[in-house]
Length: 335
Image (cartoon, rainbow, N blue to C red):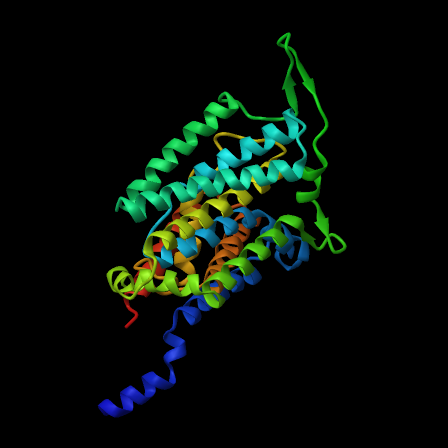
């Protein structure tokens, strides 16, 4: 085969070498595993897929924000802690203070956004490395969540002035977020994930700010010299990540019917895994939200298949780690 023939063959088969094809290939392999190891037909039932989507939705919401951050060439280690802070804050306001749920949701989203914007300000204005800035926010957010909650889970058991506990009803908003719609075929939290995916897609593909995000990830200095507002773009990026953390925290609280200050531990690792397995480059400048959706489904199906086949958590974690390494190595082979 001559050099021209090789170039022609490569050009014609370029799609097969793309991140989309690789991500889809991984998803197809995992799905095929489910068809083979179907746990006596459990994988073939719609309820299994519905439950998988519900279980992976909170992680997927975090992955939406993580995708935007990674495209800029950054990383956000604080998403799990901000989720916990949002979960305990929402539970405290909605359950213990009986606050209007809409107002409680708005406040929680503002809390998450403020945490994210703080990280973005440190990174954009003061040139703090994203790893360090978000690591600091991870520790601070976790501590704040424990301080707000008094180190206890915020549940329907409300402590009275005399030290006794009185149980109150779960607010209706908790039941709504945790409910199933469309003839019990899909959960509300999955619909929330879809809305977050659409918001991320619009930002990255339809708005000027999306082009700025890709430009910063491609070459930050060149983007700055070209007139890209790097500081405001980074604050927006990390602020959106914090906003998605707030949404995920509310969903987490509604699913667990409580706010746990220990919630979200290591969730940032799952979010990063979804983004990487989807094919978004850790170097920045390349990737997309639909690639992340493929990564979400891949991780979700993998976890579900291993779960219905009674595979232990230790083996699940090892397999997930191996898949992440494989995904990164595949990125390195890309020309």
